[in-house]
Image 1 (cartoon, rainbow over the protein chains, first blue to last red):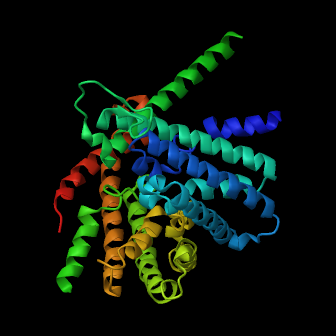
Image 2 (tube, each protein chain N blue to C red; image 1 turned 90 degrees about the vertical axis):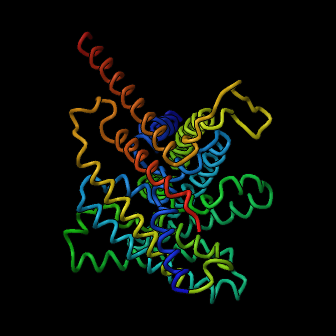
Image 3 (cartoon, one colour; image 1 turned 60 degrees about the vertical axis):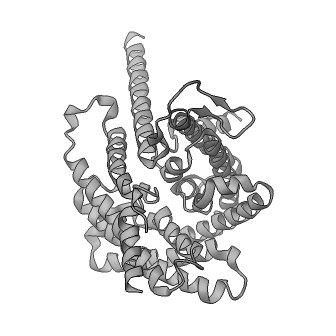
Length: 211
Length: 197
């Protein structure tokens, strides 16, 4: 159980999908114009990560090495197609807000990367933990980016849901809704994460020297 | 007809630039643009795969998926086509240009999972009834989009190679300043978006 938790934590934090591995940036930037979109795409990616991780892990001894990328793609695309059809039927609003990026989840380097690096070499339960961790880390980043862009770009938070909150008397800066804005927000966030990391490393080193 | 093709070409390179406007090719964009040579190599590799896949997938959609009512299979089918071309490209490069193969490293097979390539294929068929009603339009659009990607990558590589590391605050070095510079490029390209045909 402890091992599972550490796998989960590593996948979500130390090997965070966006800031550490630089994977999955495409949808992160394009879709996360609002917090709601961020959460939705994050959840979709997490679901696909879970299922595909599980299947790849279960089949890992059966797939011959030269065709493994193609097999992963087939597995992934089947899941995403099914998920897409389900979303279209039961949650059409989600489908329209995610737009073209829904099928593109399949080719998200993140999912293929995790399948290749982890699920193909580990048993099902750790693979699930890793998939969940990666997905959660990814969802968090997406939600934060989406929230910042939404606040600065349209002056609302969680707009379009029951918890919508508008900043009073605020003139929104619409550049944040553009791809340019996404790149800025992500750049500053990445810098923040770097600063935090080096600060923590410094603290760790100072503690070691003392003790 | 020629006018339409030229318009599609112009639109796909500038107005709906794959990286700066539509956000598709970000992964290789950030990963391979540290040097101009790898950016050029990657861009050309993607261009080849994109144009070929775009053409073949359009034909597949038109002659197989639509008549036999198999549209829901498009994601899987397109991916198989793209994967095939990437594998082919890898074999050709290994035989004739091994240095490029090494330089691109792991990002070569990742072209298969590139949002840009699949995005092109899906856009082609999304506008199936309207703009992309002819094979030539699909080919031109795929080619143009890949040119736009190549252009973006070359521009960005040029910018990155001129960023002097020691003048940048420590926290911003590497990915953050790359993202912010890309954002500035994207702002510039946003100027094109007011042009529409």
